[in-house]
Image (cartoon, rainbow, N blue to C red; front, side, top):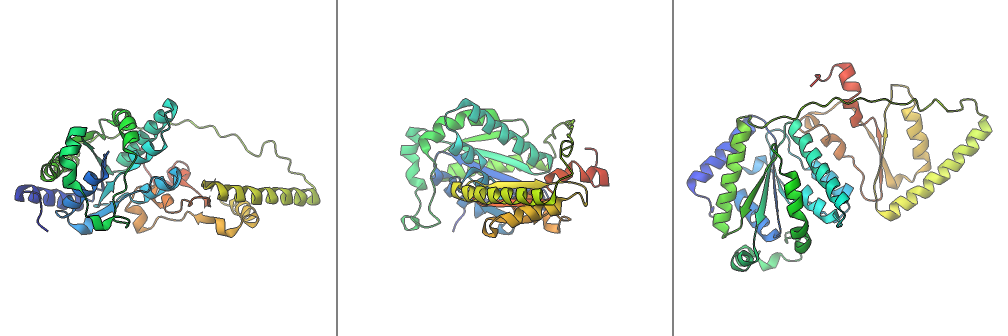
Length: 350
């Protein structure tokens, strides 16, 4: 199909994508707005002008549980030199779980800013585009964005957010997350061609900023930790029969709690850290013996693979996050970056 972009814009978009790939910079371009039709159509048109071998497309299911949805969002982050197009993102997830409580809103905004700091600090550039449409514009232009009727009730159909809730909540989220390092670009929706061209111009401009390394890194923060000794008050002398009786009681309680977890649809992560031979394996073994194997998995953290190194640090853990109602037990965790890696000299002080 014929591209809606001019030859000049097409050439510029091709060049910045080639340069991004050459410099091995991962890019996230996320799209938000009240109309799923607009987002879907614009991404579809832009995709005609991008080299598909360097593009990942992601559309989250924000209704499948907050933890599960965020793990999927994390797994979709790009590798080096790749571009991930988010047809809705963690912002739609935040809107879905805002309930009118100001404290929940503030927590969502802080979580978003923290996540984007993490992405930027780990070398992933974030471009954020929000489509704005008044009621008058909606009546005038929305019919141009109407999808083909035959895709309804298929996986290709456009999933809409609650438009009323989105319009009520999103302005405050936009204001709270419009940061110097990850600013919002607001695009007023007009006709399809005009909107697509404006979006392409915005993406090209932001990518050029990225290529010039004109984005700032956050200041390093000193974290002071004081870990109490968990064994301080433990009674180490215990009769074997008392120990076995107590373990049987705890195993039954774990079995009961796993059933409740499965019924609730919530997720659970258990993380174990410690020196070699500190007892992590034994503790995990005892826990697993009490659980139904259909509801848990054990993730052993090993040396990173080449694919792991292509992504940000937490990506390797996101792949093992549990589904709704399930448990993941991590034998070593993301805390290794703060404890093991500095000691072993695998990272710099920065």
